Image (cartoon, rainbow, N blue to C red):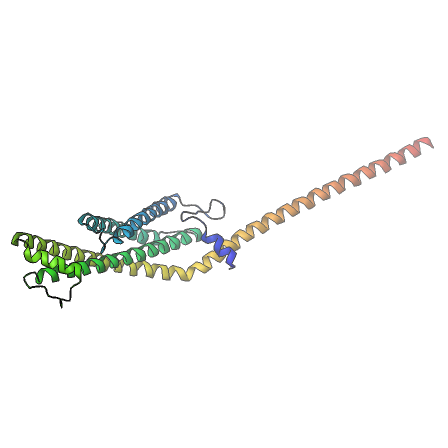
Length: 272
């Protein structure tokens, strides 16, 4: 298959069907379901963009409790969406009685899902790493709150200030900080659990993509060969129609010539 053909096929929308090629039977139910999955995948793109923005604030001066809440809200919502779409992909992959275009749609949906899931998991790991670093620093400061700070302390200046504030703070404030650290560590474990769950889903989709990838080249070739055959047949019909018109024109001219010759012969006989 040529590069131009591959680019042309890849540029088709996810819900591309065979309306343009009547030789391929349409399946309205498959079209509706694949369009639904495509819309859900598109909505994931928005979630991933928002998550990237919020994760970028973690570990900076702009990190707040609300930022962390938004990170976990987006992760939970996106995680549920991935599971839902994953089940949908399993259903559409086992759709019965489908043609080459439907198989191509299956493969494209799987690839889009796999790419989005990979990006989402990358952001999850970033969120985990950043929050672990912050939680570890806070816990270290809390544990050393009762120890005097000296110039040889391994803490950075900002952490030393936090440690000093905790050392001088009332016990209620120290307990509150401890509860916040425990809550943050629990949130980190929840994200790690969601990463583990999505890893299994990632493996399933990767397996589906691998199985369909072996068939995809054949499918694409068949699609273009059928299209080329249809175009060739159309050209042949046009050419045959042109030949037929030319033949009819020649026949009319011959009949006209014969008629003229016949009239001349008749006139010659009559005049004689």
